[in-house]
Every structure is written in C-alpha cells, then in structure tokens.
Image 1 (cartoon, helix red, strand yellow):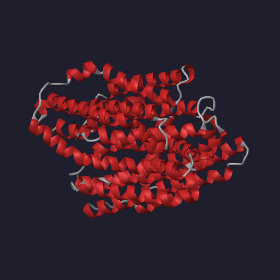
Image 2: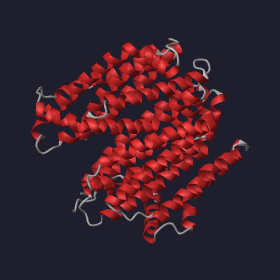
Image 3: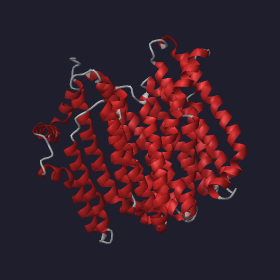
Image 4: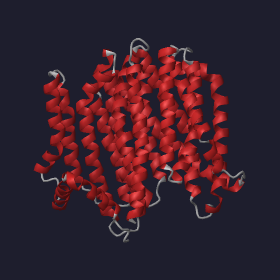
Length: 505
C-alpha cells in the first residue's frame, strides 16, 4: 500500500510541476501584456475576454471524451482492448474538433460583434477557435498520460510546448508587432506542435477499430458531463463577461490581472492537492477509518490553502507593481484578497464532494453547479453597476461560498462525515483577518511594509497554536519533523529512511 502511495505522490508532484509551469509562463507574459508599448489597458481586457472564451469552447468541445476514456480504459470488460478504446476516443475528438471549427469560424465576425460590439476581433476569435479545437485533442492524449502514469513524459512534452508558445508569443508581439493576434497564433502553433511531437506515442497506443456499441455507451456517458463542465466554466467566467457588458474594458483589465494572481492558488495548490487526495479518498471507501481520513483531509488542506491565500493576499500589491508595467492596473491588488478567499471554499467543495462520489449520487452535482452559475450571474448583474470590478469579485466569492455550502449539505445528507468545523472556522476567521490586513498597509514605506506583512504571514500557525488549534499528536509530529530534518548532518540518512519504508500492508 505504501509503495502505491509513494508512486501516487511522485506522479502528483510531477503533474503538479506541470501546473506550476503553466502559471509561471502566464506570469512571465504579464509584463509584456501590460506594457503600454505593445498593449493598451483595454487590450489587456480584450485578452482576458478572449482567454475565457477559449475556456468556454474547450468545455463544450473537449470535456466529455477524456472522461469517457478514463471510465472505459480500465474497465474490466475492456482491459484487453485499451488501444481500441483510445483510438475511438481520439478519432471522435478529432472529428468533433473539426466540426466545431467548420461551424464557428465562418461566424467569427458575428461572434466578435456579440462579444465586443465590433468585428475587429474576428480573426483573433478564429485563432482561439482553432487553438481550442487542438487543445481538446491534446487533452485526450494528456488523459492517456495520466491513465498510464506517464507523468514524466507529460511534463517534458508540456514544458516543450510552453517554452515554444512563450518564445513565439514574445517574437510575434515584440519583433513582428502582431499585437493580440500574435498571442493566439503562438497558441495554435504550440498545440499543433504538441500533437506532432507525440504522434509516435499516440500511434503506438492506437488500434484501428470501431465498436459501435461501446462508442455509443461512451458518448451517452459523456454527454451529461458536458453540461457539468460547461456550467463549471460559466461559474468561473461569468464575472468577466458581465464586466465586459456592464462596465468599461478598463475594469475588465483590472479584474483580469487580479484573477490571474489569485487563480494561481487553485492551479498550484487546490488542483495539485486534488491529484494527491483523490486516489486516497476513493481507495479508502471501504476502510473502517475512512471518515476520519476525510475529516483530516478537509482540515489539513484548508490549513495549507489558507496559508497560501494569506501569502498571496498580503504580497499582491508588491507583485502586481513588479510585474505590471501599466500603473493604471495597480489597483488590482485591492481585489486579490476577495478573489483569493474564494479559493478556500473551492478547496472545501473539492473535499466535500466525495460524499456524493462514495454514495454514487453524482447526478446532484450538475444541479448544484448550474444553480451556482445562475447565482453568480444574478450577483454580477446586481453588484457590478454598484462597485464595478469589486462587485464582480464579491459576486465570485459569494457564488463559491454557495457552491461549497450546497455541495457540503447535499453530500452530508448522503454520507455524513464528522468534519472538524470548529478548527476550520478558526482557520477561516484568522485567515480573513490576516489576508485583509495588508490593505491597511498599502500606503506604508516599502521595507517596513514588507517586514510587517512577513510577520503576519509567519504568525498564522503560531496564533492558531495560542487558540489551542493543534491536537497533542499533531504537535508531537511537528516537533519530531523539525528535530529530524533540522539536523543537516543526517540529511542523507533521513532521505534514505524514506526509501527503506516497506510495503507491510
């Protein structure tokens, strides 16, 4: 058992590194996207709208087949025909992507008018349509990586793609002066390169055959998931569409920058934790101590995520002033604590949802997601006319709070887990106080401000200790950890002890 856990952690770290690499590339490009020599403030808002339009397209084009492939690939009835299952999934995705391109590209002018009120961005929208179609094909290949635990191959190929996209983006914008179109032309080339580079691997895992009955079952299984995926994406993009319709592009730009900063928490922490926790949650369904494991998973992940939220919220002002070359966007740091806090509820939702997975009552998830998306839209329509970008931020926070509460209530009715609510409330209250405290220091001189913010961040676990947050066994484990690893001379010995753990279960 421990060997499988170690393997799972290894793959999680590698896949997680891929997630971090994506975010690093995004941060590297922010100074370019906010440079007045190449883009105006409004241009940055347009980039944000086109980016989320790509997410919407992918949720429709490429959300169902990867999940169907996952469901059928390791099915007992199809383990001898895995290459055939992959072939059917890949061919279906290629055909679906082609159909969407043929249907949408001729209407890119109308889509540009619908979104931006003018046809100037029709070519750019055509590029994002093509990029999204290629990305959907890439997702099928990436799913096979995960199914075969090819985490290293996945990361290497993804890094090559990211580096190519990064270099091409800089070349098209700085050298060729292509503007926004250059961004999405680079993405098209990068996605196409990913497919070409992995063609040998793809072909090796294909067996040319088509089982109509199996294909129908996969499609029927996947179609409802499109609604879930589409609703989930809408929940995360309605804010910027609403700002684009109800406010100025300037506020879309400010919100987009704040969202890019805060969304790093979900990508780096929540998504990576999910990759690590999910196999263990499923594996422990029939264990006698499974509910305690689920409860501790909620408490510990909440602690880690909140610590990260505090760090991002406190230092967002300095980060934004460092990476954004346009001072008109610097006010985005005011939104970061609000948007970052929503990540706390996203993480709790990801843990709570296992109650529905354990009891196989996942049909209720789609309804909750849809209701959350509708609530998000209504809150945006209400708040944005009042507070512009800040209104959209609070709409996102309240929507994610409702999403978690509805998921938690439904899951607890289906499968009760004694979560440590008092401890989680302590984390939340203290986290809110420390996260927003940075806003009170915004006018202070840089060095004292950084010192106080660092003290606020470091104080988080110690203040919890003063309120008797930790259990005795946790304190003992923390002390043991520091005693063991603080001895630099025994570092190699400590590393070797990790390798000598035997799989005794």
